[in-house]
Image (cartoon, rainbow, N blue to C red; front, side, top):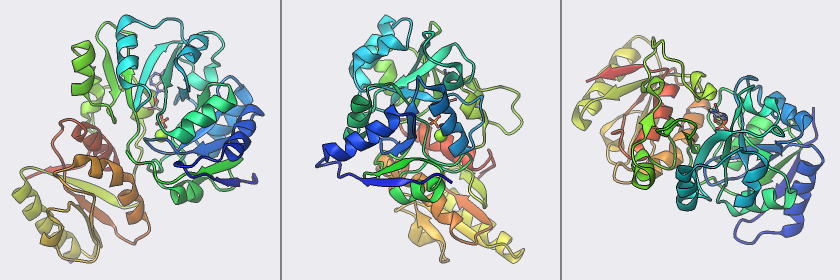
Length: 351
Ligand code: AMP
Ligand code: MG
């Protein structure tokens, strides 16, 4: 067991000495979990193989699942990437700091353990003041995957990180909720047409406004039996899977509601305990004590922000089956549906 220090920091009034204490742990080869605008990350000095190894161990993360390198200012990119294309530069100008991760060819100082053996490296500049300040003070690129145990939903709240990583990392910075709630968009820029490897906070539509046509990794269309292998190693793992089985209902809203009611009744008659992921607009249409609204259909950002929290909430219950409403795959809806599909293991009922 590792002794984990909790460092409380108010993001609106940052105590520099506390942030420096976190940065010192990173510099000396330790692991620090910290809030970002997407989800909480678990950081270590990306150039220190031993430190990076601790991330994989703490999370139980498969070694072929590469990490994203986080930098605090643009010039720091030159240590870790070989070239920045014109398209990359435009995207960086538009979206950094923010939830867009870009894939580049890596330099030789980036250890292979960080990239899962690939010769490319994923880079992001977070916008969260604690994340930015911590990375800047550490003076090194910070490798930081989400701060959850592998297989659990990414953490968006302090207590999620504590539940997963207490006793497994050197420090956790408590800095309030990660507001956006879904991980960054991962965009591969090493081919002619940029390709989204993981949908996230920055949408396909927004990227296309800056650099024109963008592809989506066809392996993400996601069918249980698909033979396609995702280009992003992490996407092949069934993340986010709650203890209960998740079934998604797809169709127009009225049919989804009817379908959920029908399946709930059937499953309950077979003796299963059934929960429902509803929305603000629909939650009153269902009966039972485990109906949780994930947010408002009129503001999908609220759904993005709450989704992982709701999945974790169901893990605290004895529910066997979760029936979930679905969303149109437009804008942030694409990232929401990607995570829901993975949570459900692509188990979809069309109504
Ligand atoms: P996480 O930080 O836990 O959100 O996971 C990072 C995601 O970025 C995973 O899905 C990785 O597979 C992906 N990723 C990191 N580096 C690369 C890379 N060089 N090429 C493709 N995907 C990457
Ligand atoms: Mg993750």
